[in-house]
Image (cartoon, rainbow, N blue to C red; front, top):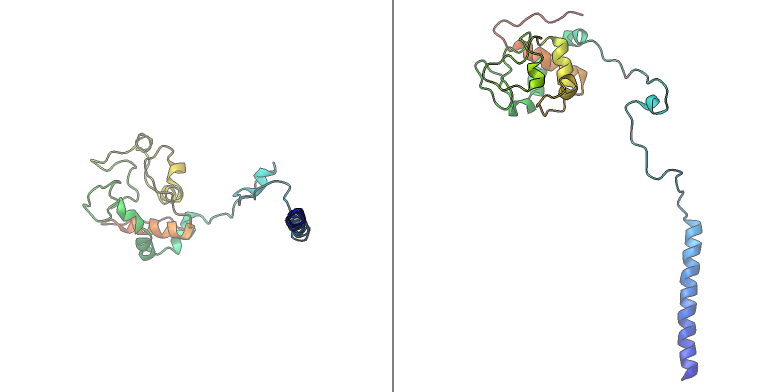
Length: 181
C-alpha cells in the first residue's frame, strides 16, 4: 500500500515537472517582444508638434474660390442628405431643429425669423454667410462658432464642402455670383 502511494505521488510530481518544463520551453520559444512603453501610438494630426518642433502645415486645402470653380450643385444636393434631418431647403420651408437654408448664401447669420439661435451664433448676426464662412462652418461648426448648438461634426472633404456651398447658393430666386479663382 505504501509503494502504491509512492507511485501515485511520483507520477503526479513527474507530470507537474513535465508541464512546468514545457511551459518554460514554450515561453522561451514563443516569447513576445515587450514594448518599452505599453500600448500603441494613435495616429496624430500634428506629428511634429508632439516632438516639440513646429508642425508642418497640413496638406494645404485649395482656396474655396478654386474649389467652387469645379463644384457641382447636384453633388452638393446629394451631400446634404444628412442635413435634411434638421434643416429644410425649399423656399418657405419651416424651421426644424435648425433654421431653413433657402437663400442662406450671402444672408446675415442668425437672421431667420422665429428660429432660436444660440448666443454664440447671435453674436455673429452682423456677419454674412460668404463662401469662405460657409466652408469653414461646414468643415467644423463647433470650431468656427464655439458654443453653437449645432451637433453636426462637419464635412471633412474640401471638394464636398465646395459642392454644398454651390448647392446652397443655388437655393435662391437669384443666386449670387460665387467668388472666382
